[in-house]
Length: 241
Image (cartoon, rainbow, N blue to C red):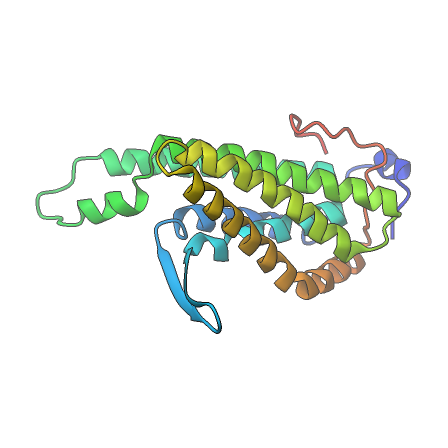
């Protein structure tokens, strides 16, 4: 394993076997969480609780933080930063294309324009809220994880996965719901939904933690890499790796 910090920076750029696959997985999950999940409110009956309603996107979005943890833990903050920007660019393009396609005049013989607008016609305010929240939340998650890894000298991996997700998802929820719905929802509803979604997202991360740890250990072994960000510049506004 390469855990020498400064030695990482001195080495030439490496070609990793699975980095591209992890990046594709991250971007795919992020796009699904924004294009598939938000359009549906789901409801399940839970023991002792009864009917529980939630946005279906909660099934997708926390997985992007799982991928973010994997990227930062194995490949380092700079590699994760590049992937976060890739997801941001992909979502900007998807939002633009959705707006264009929704705005195209429908054929008179095609009766599904109203349904199409309902699914893909997100308001600019919600799109903007989603992009800002994603950008801030993902970078906070990666930053906290990388710094905790240095502070613990690589120990307590599961602990830093949970703490970084609590911070990242917290920032995401704290930004998204006020930017998207302040003035539309009442303050009580806004804070209740924000807290509930944050709790659900963190719970999904904890549920997947045993699998995440197994994947990370397998990747470290397969890639012969365990990156420590001792010499990394933590600005989010760079694509250097």
